[in-house]
Length: 160
Image (tube, rainbow, N blue to C red):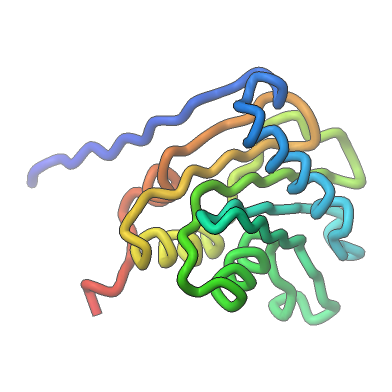
């Protein structure tokens, strides 16, 4: 047996105002998308905004369904829209914001596992890292320089 240590590095900002101006704007767009989420069952709204290298910004919000597995997270809504509308564009940054309708969310909320897998597909496809900024409703913002920091042992096409 040989141990394997896997580490990830993140940057933590105390508030949105500490982010670069372009990322502040992207996070504001994510918050606007979050507020449009359809979350009558979980009461947990998430918004995502994706900046592309063609200067387009696409958004997504979680969309729930009474048949729970039929819903879709904000991150996948946004990434699949970006892939469909701008298949040749590269994704530069993703901003994510989450809000509970039951209590204040002050801790950063990262993408769920399914979204991490969907996001890493596009990072592998474009062969460049995608920075991910995530937060709750207020408070600290975390930054991962790559999806691989969120999902270090990726499942990707080379294993198929």
